Length: 164
Image (cartoon, rainbow, N blue to C red; front, side, top):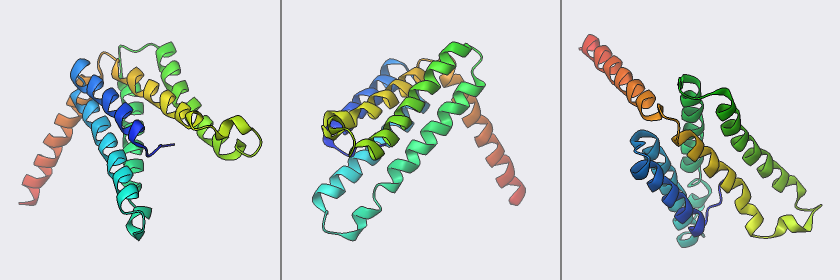
């Protein structure tokens, strides 16, 4: 699902900055920035250290952060009071199309020659970026994550005081 290329790093960086700075979604934007950094690190390692065995494992953090972003996005969609059902369906459908396109690319490259073109590999990325932006524009995105962060921090402090 992730294209580990320089151009994908640039595209994700731009979207991450828009989410963080323009839309003022600092918590969600930070996750997208972390995701972009993991893509960049794997891209760098795979190009510079391609002969080392470690490059087999450097993609794992990017996929882990991707999983966290998807779970966080579903949490935001679930908790959102300002989002109507059509917007939720549209948002989830973008992720679904992205995932289905990845599967189609994996198993359809032998059957359809056009799927071997380089630009076709970016179609799932574009749908995923649409998913990220759709979740980012949810009005109560920031407040949902801030409230969850504050509650979690309070619970951790409470538990750590009991242990002492």
